Length: 199
Image (cartoon, rainbow, N blue to C red; front, side, top):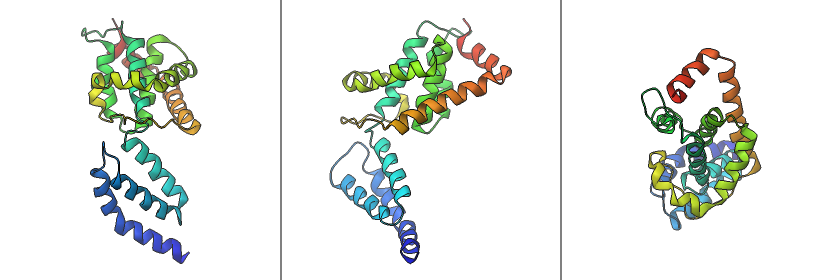
């Protein structure tokens, strides 16, 4: 217990240092990243769950796994490319301008693209997930399209770290859950269909 309490105090004291360190690491590798990993190794000695969460967050912050977000954008745009809204804007552009910026966590952003792709093509999320996995694995193809979605801000690293099954399942669950919620509220569904998909 004393070790855990000391560890918590250490986290409180070191977090602001680690946060500043992380701020300097975006797009970089080397000593800074290695030092942060040592910090996470220390946290593991008394709070493995917290260390894992931070390590997973680092994977996305550094862009090792953000390829999936861009792959989802590519997939969504493909499924929506022929659709337009009442004001004449492409439906996908409305999604990028009005909806995606309101979502902050990467898994949720990725699931949001699946959500709109589902309503555009009526494919089940399970099928869209298979398509998403295929695109995500084509890392060179994903990186070629990064500049087309620069507003997403989470730029992919040159190195791709595959998602765990838990991460894939989390994305699928969020997308299916959001679709279920919308289908249970016809007024929301109607508003979404009109704002984004009406020709």
